[in-house]
Image (cartoon, rainbow, N blue to C red):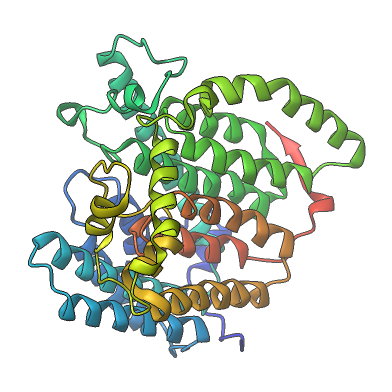
Length: 405
């Protein structure tokens, strides 16, 4: 991929510490877009559309990379599938509009980010992420307070954990345990990685802060994603003598993680989130012949699971991005989405020679996509933008990364 010209927007202000005073409309909208995902009123589609327009205006020349072409194929096929297999439900129309808006936002945002110097933007993003995570912590504490803090040390089952989330107390984030947990993991890991690229430092306090929020969400999703990402990040940052200590620490913490976080005793239970996933995945592979090579149609997972799963809890997808994509959109959808991901990762790799950092950044999103997401959620789109923004800032050497508070 050819490197686009760099626009030195707001660099003078950033050097003087006045980045907020010189913030552009597009930069403001990028940060507002991130915040809008956490608002209880779903205004983010409108903000995404407006943001895309201003990204386009500040981009000297659009770059139609291979990943964007694959994404266009996927989106076009999804729209055609929706039109051909129109289920007559408002939810289907909402989701197809969401798919188009989210992917247009991704295309214009990446083009915009790729043609400018983003150091000032990342500094402002750091403050926004802290505020977002702090409000998420407050929201979770409100949930726990209403539950008399009975689940503050963890829950025995997914059903019990889900009962913590009450619509009447919801004002920030999401009222769904797993989706809110996944969002915390992705935003939190971005927050952890920013000092790595800005100051060559890996902050222990940030790691503990993010893990605390993830634990209080009572969702296994953020903890597993964060454990994988943070472990790899620390592993590549410390000297060999500290790696033994890291393994010992993991071994000591493992029983607590398995019992209180992973809830391994109830992992295959029918009222456990992971147990439900196993039932859905079993139905997918056992009844693979019931899936058309062209796909069963946009948002067809509920009908499939209702017919073939041992039991069905009403989820809109199969809890795996790739299985859901094949089930709904068949070979064309599956391979175009896979090509999009592969080529997007390849473009990131070519942007800066930060192979270890790129691996660390992609670990959380890929691990979550294996157990959640439909593939076109706004969480995925925003995190891919954050990945590109953080990982492409500059080349770093993990030999120079220092652990700090």
